[in-house]
Length: 300
Image 1 (cartoon, rainbow, N blue to C red):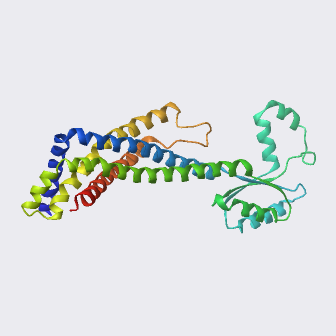
Image 2: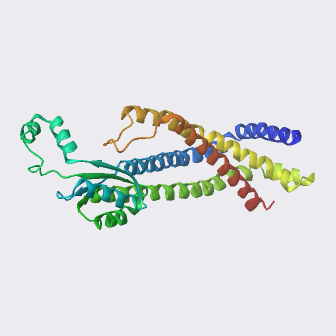
Image 3: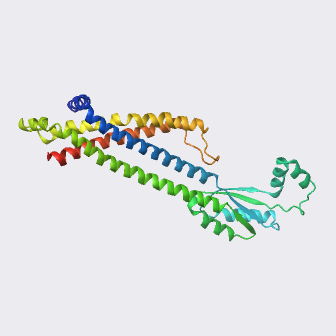
């Protein structure tokens, strides 16, 4: 174990030396990784926040079930029992027309003056049940089942707006995933080609290693570690942009975009998690790029 640690630490030290010794070529690889990692970081942040928006909408969507005016208290109890038999329903809250009338009157003096003289028979308001669902994807089927219950007058959950927003968020999420995967593949391709130039300039060094009987692993190992180091260096700028840029964005918009439903994820620990992912992608891509360049172009 100690031998492996010493070998790894020596490899990283030599890799840093090699990067600065071949600075003009290494800077091309670092720049390539930095640019693509910035776009990957933006895509990751966007994708994560879109998922957060979707979850907030799911939590906020409420099905309002209006009950026929002729329903008695016993009927309301039976409707409540029937609703609880539906699997996708998470919570049920009864709001009587008296409660609704009181809320309206508290909101405005106009409502208070109009509704103050209403007796129970004159009130056009209806008793209602406020329902939260477990799975928003199944809300249509849930609503169909609710409508079949006796004395249900009408059901409303803002279906048009909810479905449009969920469809839009789903498209954005899928696009960002495709973009991240595509950028990683492009990054590997670019790194292979830029590192290939570095390896080509060091053919003499590799030839000497072969002549002294170095194994394939001994030849490839320094280049793979060097690729990892280049990936680490290339991820510095994207990480700084994520940490400081996203924190500034969150503060500037006070954590909310356009609506209280569209809330940004709090910066801590979110930015550090994204930064770790970016660092990991940079290191892995650098290692893969170096390994492929050595194997394919030097026939090691």
